[in-house]
View (cartoon, rainbow over the protein chains, first blue to last red):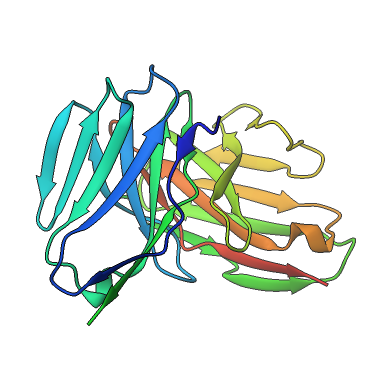
Length: 108
Length: 113
């Protein structure tokens, strides 16, 4: 079983909709969870991190963590075409482990 | 966030040669890392660059192939030695500051012919 799993997508949503990106992880000892955005040809950019169960909101982004289910998600409200990118979930075990990423496409 | 720069941004190299990539952070950081991202794939950690001691390599990566230096708290280098076309990839420097947040440099796109 992979340590961090994501659906590779693409996830296609219309402009203005909510995009929901999901990630599961295998190590119950994980304490820190991150979402990175990566535009094609660019390096990953940290957009959200969450350490506690529940929701954390930052602008149009909401990260949700459920440690019992070993599940972390990212919601993007009012999706814009500029949000089209690959979103990488990452988890700290003894080091930062990345999922394979979900490609999001927001169409006008 | 930390501002991280890398040099070179890209290079095309011949098989059998070596390339050294430099990473500079705008302030002192506790930890620095080197990652590889092959086309269409996610990030793979090569090693943790330790200041004042040898780097810690991940499974599948060895010091002879990827020697790393970290002479101070703001700078590190990664050398890709005796290159082959399989080494063609994007190499990313990352720094860790504060609690657990890691930030990435712009990457070095390496093509080996």
